Every structure is written in C-alpha cells, then in structure tokens.
Image 1: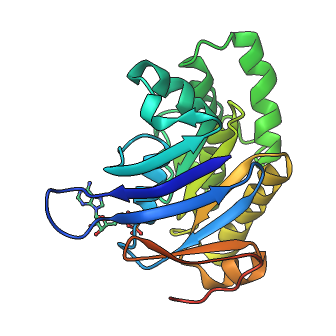
Image 2 (image 1 turned 180 degrees about the vertical axis):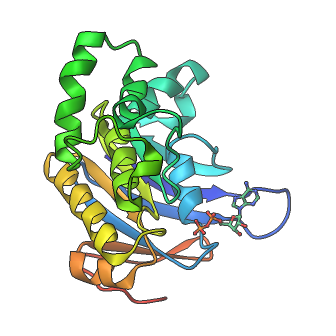
Length: 228
Ligand code: ADP
C-alpha cells in the first residue's frame, strides 16, 4: 500500500512547492496512471516514493514503511521493493540484454545459478526471449524499454514506477510496452505510470490521478484523459 498524507515538496527556499499537500492512497496491485502538464509534479512524486528526494512536509508510508523512520541503511531495501523505468531507458550501452538485466541481480549478490535460472523467465515475460546477446544499439526503442522493464522487475518489486516510458516510442512500440506493464500488473505488481499519451490513457480505462501545479485536482476510476 502506498499512502501519502498531505505531502509537500519545496525544492528551494522560496517559490511555489513542486508538490503541495498531496494525499493519495494506492492499494496493492493497482494500476494507476498519473497525468499532468510538464512541471506539474509527477516526477517529484515518484522521486519522493523512491527516496531520491525527501518531502518538506507530510507523511509517506509504503508497504508499511514510514519514511520518517527510514534510516539511510534501509534505503537499498526500500529500493528493492520499487522498480523504476524512465523515458530514456538508461541501459548500459556496453552490456548485452542478458547482462543489463543480470547486473541488477549481481549487485545484490544473487548466485550465478539463480541468475541463469531467473533471466530467461523475465525476458520471456517482456517478450525478449532470444535477444539475450543483442546489444542495446541493435534493438528498437520499444525493445530497449522492455529490457529496462525486465531489469526493473527482475528482483520482483512490489511496485513498478514507469515515468513516461513511452515518451520516445512510436505507437506500436508504445503499446508493446504498455501491454508488458499490464502483464506485470496482472502478476501482482502495483504499477504507477506517468504519461502524456491521451490514447493510451483512454484505452487503458484505469484509475487516473491528475496533478496540476503540485496538487491532485482529480482522481477517478476508469477514467479518460481530460486536461485539468
Ligand atoms: P513533471 O514530472 O510533472 O514534469 P516535476 O516533478 O519534474 O514535474 O517538476 C515539478 C516542479 O518542480 C517544476 O516546477 C520543476 O521545475 C521543479 N523541480 C523539479 N525538480 C527540481 C529540482 N531538482 N530542483 C528545483 N526544482 C525542481
């Protein structure tokens, strides 16, 4: 469960806050779309949840962890519960598909045999079986993003945050990525998706949270795209 209670984030000393008393409740296994104009505060919201940024006010509780009580040494554990993908994929250019995904397991000390066992399964889920040896430069944008998703979910996080994952993709590739997010959601992972893509929002018919000037201005189930 993700709980935000009147969360505020002010970056500098002065000016309007990037997030202003945002309260939200997201249940386990939900698929939530966050929309809003550029600068509305969507990325800030995701960064507060991954603890890349700290709020200047309010309370955040994720999976029973109260962020106020969180010690620095607990942050790696928190990050294992949250997978993240970005618009620009952030793959390692000199590593192949298998290595890009296995790296996420190596850094947490997973055994070689466990890695060999896990990677084919996760590449199958994202539809990249047979591409193990391909380099990122040999893949389409949609395939790169699906490698990034595989890397984000290989440690089986409870939550997957996708920040404009289709922003650089043509419609066909964008839908391939969205279908993978839906599949991962069906397997039981909470998905938070930010997007500007009206068609995707309208076709998905999911809960849509609209942020404007740092505030939640609407929060509707089965919603269509409506600029606040
Ligand atoms: P979105 O993801 O909806 O485009 P952001 O969360 O990136 O919005 O930004 C919200 C507001 O916070 C914007 O006014 C932006 O300029 C500001 N902002 C974001 N990150 C920083 C930062 N690191 N330092 C200062 N201001 C920031």
